[in-house]
Amino acid sequence: MRFAKILSVAAVPMILLACGDDSSGIPSNPSDPKDPVDQPKDSIVPNIPDSLLKPIERDFSQFWQGEGTAEKPFLISNEEELLKIAFYVNDSSMTFKDKFFKQTANISLTKAWNPIGIFGQNANGWGNRPFSGTFDGDAKMISGMNITDTSSYSGLFGLVRGARISNVIVSGAKMSVGSIAGALAGLADSVIIENCTVENAELKGADRVAGLVGEAKYVTVTNVTVTGTVSGTSNVGGVFGSVQNGTLANLTNRATVSGKSTVGGVVGDLASVGEESVITAAFNYGAVTGTKDVGGVVAKMSTTKMTQSGNNGAVTASESQMGAVGGVAAVVSNKASVDQVFNTGAVTATKVQSAGGVFGSMKNIAATNVFNLGEVTGDAATFKGGLVGIVDGSSNLSFGYNAGKVPNDNKAGTVAGRVTSTATVKDVYFDKTVGGNSLVVAETMNSELPTGFATEDMKSSTFVATLNGTGRAWTIDPAKFGGYPSFDWAK
Image (tube, rainbow, N blue to C red; front, top):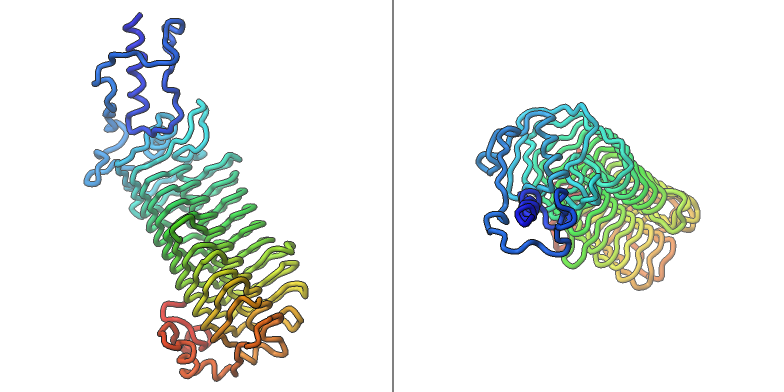
């Protein structure tokens, strides 16, 4: 029976090593069904020829045209060819690392979609099966994706790790799923995503749900647009539900986003371990609603640098006395930094601790060159500010203005609701016309209050020079933002 043992072990590299993933979860010593008694259980049969341990080269020519190289990628032109990728990744543990795919035609999916890549277990109990190759959608459309499954890790891709995905258009996706879900991918780990679009999506899920990717770690993402509707419970975003360590640029959300806690127009939660994340040119145009920590661009942000971003959608939060709501971000903390951001959308708070035209609350961060034109409203128990609800810790807010209306009550200020004694607010201004009889800062231990100007003075080149100080961030265009100062890139 020794020969039978060798045959059973030789089958292992055919499955495990052919474009395989080391953490596939396949047992290292499968039993030989032909010899269940004599088969060793705790050791591999010795003296196996090296040739049997080498990866098996598979012939994919019967499924795809091409060679899987950068010069001659595997060509995907229809649903069946796309399904084959899911089959080999999910059932055969092939990651396709260093392999290239290119979509060559619009594809309409007619079957309930099985995501490419598994995190967790499949029907055989084997899990952690990522797609790790390069997929180029070539700006061709994938339409009709339908996923109705309460399991997690859902999307066109369920799990991608070490992959590159570009030029993909997912149109009309309908997803009613569990956690960690997005039209493009559920979980993206160490992935490059570029030039991707999700249009007219209808996504409904639980935790970490977004239009593009539910959960992302160590990602680089550029040029993404999302439209449709996205709803979930926590960590919900138009583009990303949560991001840990990312470099994000040119993200646009036009979808309506709703949830309970940590709900953002572009990103729900954005944080970093070690090196800070960066988010640049992130814009939201959709309505964003939730109960706790709701932001027009980002709900919660820490150890992150945000630049040249803005919100134009209405932002609403209610029924969480410890929560915050902000036109750009609800909660910004832990040495984050912000430069050149704006809000024009209405910010509404009910039974929320703090609300601001730009930030709900900021703690231990630096923010410079910010402005708000959106009205801030809320009940009398909420700290409300034209720019910030609460400025706390060692925060520094400088060079900015508010021209959005605020209510006239004892917890509302045309600039801030509350400024603690350790925080600094300097070179910040407000429009006296929209401020009415409101306080400048509702509660402060700082003796120096921001300065108010008449509307016509705020629309002058002199005021632009005041905002610029020694810098050059601010400009003015009568055709933009009602003639108030803004930035060259802003629109």
